[in-house]
Figure 1 (tube, rainbow, N blue to C red):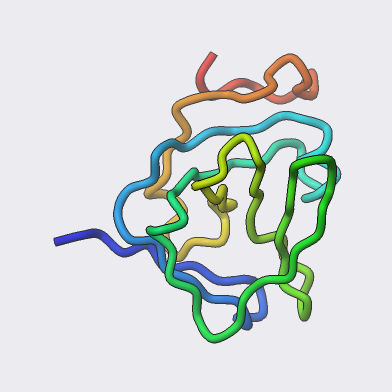
Figure 2 (cartoon, helix red, strand yellow; figure 1 turned 135 degrees about the vertical axis):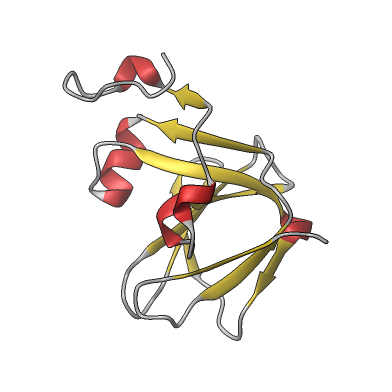
Amino acid sequence: MTKIHKGSCNCGKITFKVEGDPKWVANCHCADCRRATGAPYSTYIGVLKSQIKWGTAKPTSYASSEGVRRTFCDRCGTPIAYEGIRWPDEVHFFVGLFERPEDFVPTSEVHAGEKLAWVPLANP
């Protein structure tokens, strides 16, 4: 049986399901992700677009930089995902949106050279 991972934004307008396991789970320490989320780093899962089933509403998106689209809920403002032309078949969801975020353990650190000095690496 394929595992289903359910998630939503803070207000519940945007809901989604991811069928199966992610391709990867990583912490991103880049300054762009910090500004987009207000957090010291972001933890993402990378999934294929074919694994995603959206609920009745889809997130709003904007081009945050060249070749990058970030999605969010237009009602509550919750950041939802990252999409980049470098990964045309993938969507990178924020782990905190899932009903069971503990299911996703990061196995890598991205842009660790940009991390804040007081943030420890989970996977040095």
